Image (cartoon, rainbow, N blue to C red; front, side):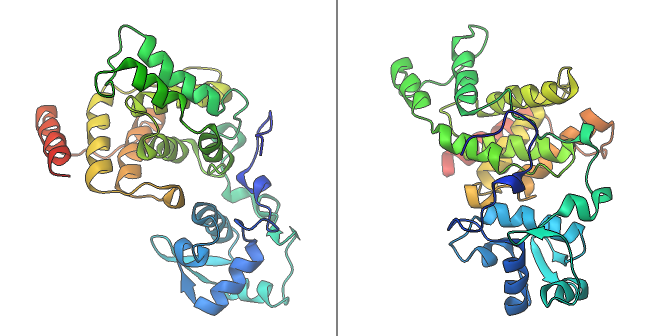
Length: 287
């Protein structure tokens, strides 16, 4: 399914007639059955868990479900009334018109990334190739072979990369979206090397499309990348069905983007970078 050459919402691509998607109304019906559930439980290993995760956040915004804990939800009394037909909300094909129901809970149009017209799977792959071709950049070859490395990069699935953009959390503010983007590209580790650099370079494309200016880069980016690599290796399990989770890897990047985009950030103890490198190298050796 091709991305539109304009701003879009992830909800545009939810087609409940397709076997991988489930409607908002069916989610409510399942919550009656389960009482409370996570996106993984609602997916039943049939539907796309990462999309259900976003649907639940939107249903929470409009008061149909409420969060019990991280990634676990239950239906509200209002949600039960809507599910049973006692209350009415605008919907189409089982999907509620969430932005129309309560647009106050969504970011301003100039504070969320939803225009991918300057980016696609082919471009993301080209960005990784560009890092190889830049003599100022280091790149880890597969078995010391540039040929094998280039072949591996060329075999990265454009379909998978396009899926990330198609099912991206378009209703969240930029700091959260930026954290999700880096977590997805670096966490799924599409490329032999430079996954973080590819994530940041492509995020810059999305940011410039919206803001018509460069993505701010913090002076502590090197440390943050080290923390991110440690979180990815030791603390998280990034797969397509776990996309958009707010886990340890997401938190590393959310703190960073809150700091560079909003000037907001908690003071934290920061170990010396050489100690972080020792931790990362040790983790790679034992895993």
